[in-house]
Image (tube, rainbow, N blue to C red; front, side):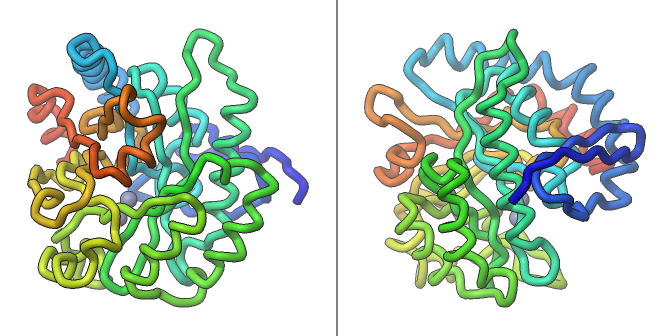
Length: 303
Ligand SMILES: [Zn+2]
Ligand SMILES: [Zn+2]
């Protein structure tokens, strides 16, 4: 497919995206809060997050930390992939997984593949000379019959010639929701892992966060990891220990604002990458800075 850039101007922001010309969904809510999040992020949060991460790394020099759950304009996020990668690198993260939604008749797989293509381009053509490039993993968030499940693949699947394999394997997600058990199994042929997103969180209209009793009965040994701490969904639990899964901390950021407030860490002396640490159940969910709670509470009022 030809790659070309297109510019879309929404609410005063220029959003550049490479790939096919896609009608990307940007909700009215996103347009409304974008100026607010820009202000809050730049004025209040970024410096505190940066300081928290720097302290964490000083105290744990072998710890690799990163974000495993966030969204760009390729699904329902407000910011471009490039801006998300640049900010994540600036605040000191080592890796990031952008997890666009994939849902039948709402968020097509094509948009996720375009997002992965864009992540790959941003890494190849890194345009922030003052920042060390961040490690990027291909991944996405699938709507299953029981709730959202994140799949993260081997970095090999950032290569353009490998995207076709993802398309072949996952195109059924455009037509129907499958069970979380079946979905979890599908990551493995791609060297991938699965992560339960926002467990126990409910939405009335559709399956959102799988229940812990269901996970205990059907998903242990099948799903690799579970979110224990989430900034975006305001919870701090220890589900991973009970279920025998890897522990994940993340933000589910849609506004390039709270990435870095809760992270997942692993010991780089023991594991060569995030996937290896998740498979061994040797990751750690880490809240970066408790003092951010007041500010985040304020931010949540409008998010
Ligand atoms: Zn979700
Ligand atoms: Zn999400």
